[in-house]
Length: 150
Image (tube, rainbow, N blue to C red):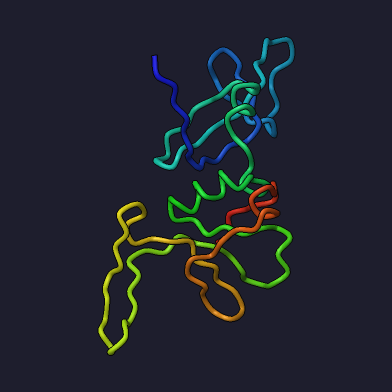
């Protein structure tokens, strides 16, 4: 059997399950009943589910403390990412597409194609504009303070 790994962004909150019914932890659960600890999960398409606590916590991390790999996966699905420790206001990284440029002799080249990455690159957006082809530092790649920004 093959192994699989997945990345998706979901919404979740701590919950109990009692006889197949899910109660968020803010609600009162009747005394004397067997409860299972876990999470109520809402997927991007609106589907709601329940996950046992240990399974959920092994598979998901909050988007406010991601490692670099999860941050890159978020950028690949269109999210803007940033480090919590960055000093500049409104600085973030996003995945850019369909780049073009002007070659010598004012010849427009649109879009630039590359066999391995097509026409996309990480773009740093900061106080001085956009930097196409942003490269992460060793500190950025090893940090666990990446987050999704709106």
